[in-house]
Image 1 (cartoon, rainbow, N blue to C red):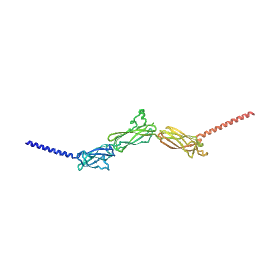
Image 2: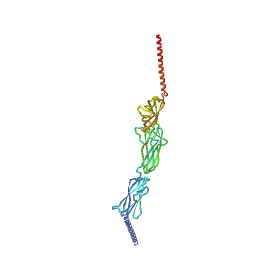
Image 3: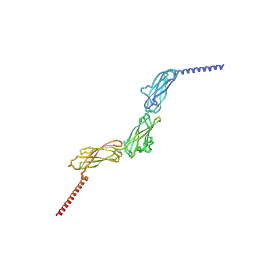
Image 4: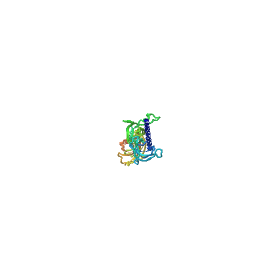
Length: 432
């Protein structure tokens, strides 16, 4: 009998527990089940200093409707909400799963800070139902610079035109154009042509000699550990031109290497031009003249000597008129090319304006205008003042020569006269 009573108590206890469990299950089925999903963000990845649109999908997976649903975006560095955006969105009621309209999409316009670290950055969003507590979730947003570019801003050569055999300094400015940090930025000033392919028809030595420069006091590759967004850096290279370098423009290969914050590596190849040459050194003087203080008309020969490193092209000389003389011949002479360590001459015929009675020594000024180009086609124009000294014939030795000739003629006449006189006298004696 006792055993039967105990059995009944156990059955009643089990039955009570079953009723409680059924009531609990029925209550749970009536609770809404919200889920937030990150649909996308555009652009993907987002770039530092730019905006992106992010979309979230809110789903009610429960069998009961979700009432008074509120969603709020909670951006933290490096994210911030656009000033025209409202972070809080009152959605209202969201139907239960299986019924229409149990899903809603919310969109935000978010800004990425310029100093954002590349990689995955968390973006927080939270929601609640009515007066319940907030529930927060995080989603990773991919941030990466959209254009990881380190550009060559400028190249400066000091001096601008490098003389053969002379040292120079080349300064190359790099700038980080990206919105993120670039690491291990290196620049190779490739005088050895190690960064380009050598044509199969050329030897390494002959191709290497195409660049007549050598590094001086430093290596040809330099590096900086970190280059911040918008930051500039100047790399300086000391070089020297070969003494036999021909005047012209030479192309030097450059290679820039760097890494972004995601450790992606970049390599850029470019070229810069360096000018070898020097200003032509033309010496001009009067080489010869047939003029003197007694002779008003004659020729003047002018010599042009190229004492510089560079050749001269298209040399043209023009003698200008003055009150002291008139130009009888053509006043312009085209000489053409004048190589280094060579000379050319130009001849002009002039008439000196002076009185016949004025036979004193004097100097006249010959203004000579010259135009030419150097080996790099840079144009030059100069006016050279030449002094032409008109000496007396005596000082030039021409007067002594004339006197000797006169005395010789007189002497010959006298000798002839004496000879004729003696011969005639002898004939007269014979007749007697």
